[in-house]
Each structure stands twice: as structure tokens, then as C-alpha cells.
Length: 393
View 1 (spheres, helix red, strand yellow):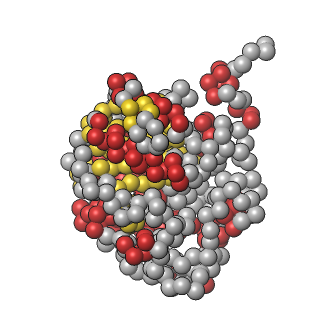
View 2: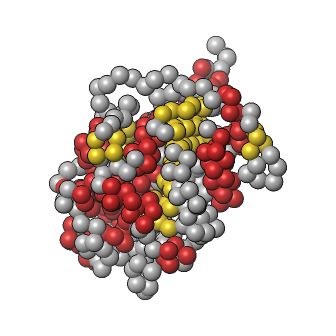
View 3: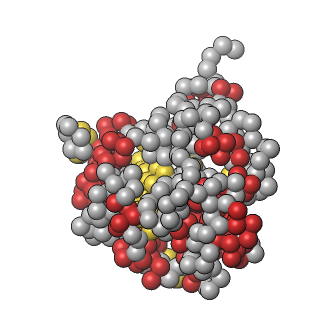
């Protein structure tokens, strides 16, 4: 038999072509981003036993609408294709408006959300703070004494939460010889891992001369450290915390998963996979001030601090992401856009977004398989697209 397999016909390549060495590259990421557990060890976060996910809500009427986010108008469908979108779910006023899926993704499929994982992890930190279990102002060494000889030896959990640790580390996604590549090996995301754990790697990092708290520095190891902080503070594994504190109370319909390292440490900076619908449920819970299904999940004061009142404007102004949100701030692993309607979001590489616009009561989850991990001009266009879409629905 010489014809294509069903897999090859759908994705454009054979399954055995997807390797640990290339899973984040185009075109293989169209499949691997939905199936991370086949490539990297992962732990399950079970959902409740309720009914299944309602059927896809058609938004074909919106696809032909025109938006202008770049130099020329284009249809919504054209922008979704141009931005390598795998799935889009839109919610307004707490109800699903509609879904869109690329031909290679189905309703109910999980998709890795990369650094939106940071935002979900921070919610759990907020829950534990509200329970009096975790103190965001405490020194890191209160919970992890062995961090004393690292960059975190004189840092607080607040510095970790707000990405203001003066960490001597660069997010060099594409440099195979960088410390970032060593980091990826420690997470088992790259070939050659299994000799150094994620915890060992993080606690080997050193600091810069500048004091902590002065500048927004986007450094992913901070957010893996946050997962360790929560485990030490609570005495529970991160996956159990996520299930009991967030996933079940949220009413998530589908199980989530989190990639883990050689010691079983959860990759809380970027290894969480969820469905688009469940991701919008997280955004809606935040829009409702921390409430879902009539139940308070996270304190309202924490949500308000995270999404509108907290964060250092000065630290953001000194950071490198200023062009994306010139009036923005960063607090508890969430981005405040600084826009008039008070929109805020979680963002992940390769085009993952959870966008919440309180002014229009809209929540948007966009999952993508962009060829490049970071595309700054496209990110600016995506924000403009969300703003336009929020006005349409």
C-alpha cells in the first residue's frame, strides 16, 4: 500500500517525523502542540465527572467580517490563517459565542499553552495566599532554603511572581548553545536531558548586580520556581493543587496535563495543556472577580490586584516588552494592557493567548502553531484583532 495514511493526509507529514528535536518547528508543531504527552513525560490533572463539552458553536458568520490590524483590511478567516491559529473560542457575558478550529484540531483536543501556564500557576498562588498557606512577600528561602546560594537567595516570592528577579539568564529560544538550551534539556523538552533536574538547574542560576524589583525581566525559570514554592508551602504536588484548587472548582470539562522533568517536577512555566473551552473558563472566572459556578475560587482582592491595580509601572517601563503594551504592567504572571477597557491577558510563545476584556465582557482563547516562538509585530496585530473581535460579538 503506497497511499498516505490518515495521519499524513491530515497533518501533511508522518508521525515518525515528529521528534524531540523538532517538535516545536513548523509543520510538526501543528500536531505536537496537541500531543505533548507523546513526546515529554506528562502528569494528568483530572476534571470532574460531569457531562461532556457542548457541541461546537459556529461562528462562520464572523469569518467573512473584515478587520484592519496591519496595512490592509482582511477577513477574520484570513487573519486566523495568517496567524497560524489552531483554535479560537470566544465567550461573552459568560456564554460561549462560538468556536473556530483549523482542519487539524477538533473540539475537546488539548493544546499546550506554553507561558499561559504561568498565569494559571499564579492563580493557585493566589488561592493559597487567600488560605494563609503562601506568603507572596516572604523570602524565597523561607520555602526553599537551598536557594540561598543562587540568584534567589535574597529574592522574595513577590519578585518571582512579578518577574523582577535580577536573574543572569536570557530567553534565547533558538540558540542551541545557550543556558536556555540547557534549561530545555533539564525540562526534558530537548534531546540530551535526564542528567540535571529542573530544580538543580534553577538553583544553579546566579544574579546580576542590579537589585531585585527594579526591572521587568521575562525569565521563565522564575515560574518553574513558583511551582516549587507552592509545593513546598502546601506540602502537595502541583498537579494535585491544580486539580483540587482550580480545575474541579472551575468546572473544567476536560482533563489537563502538565509536563514533568526527571524528578516529576511540573513545568509550571510552560508545560500545561488544556482545551480552548476550559481556558476561556479560566478567563471568565477572572472576569467574574474570582468566582465560577457560584463558588469563590480565588480572593477578589487578588484578582483586582492582578488585573488592574497591582504591578510596577516603572519596572514595566524598564523592560523589553514595552512596545506591546506601552501603558501596561505585569502582576502575578498576568499582563495588564493599559487599554481603556481594562483588558488583561496571559500570553505564550508560538501564539497562545487568553484575552479578557471586562469592558465588553468578552473572553478569547487563541491557540496557535506559529512557526517562530516570538513574533513581536504579529503580537501587536493580534492584540488589535482581539480589540476588533470584542467589538463585533
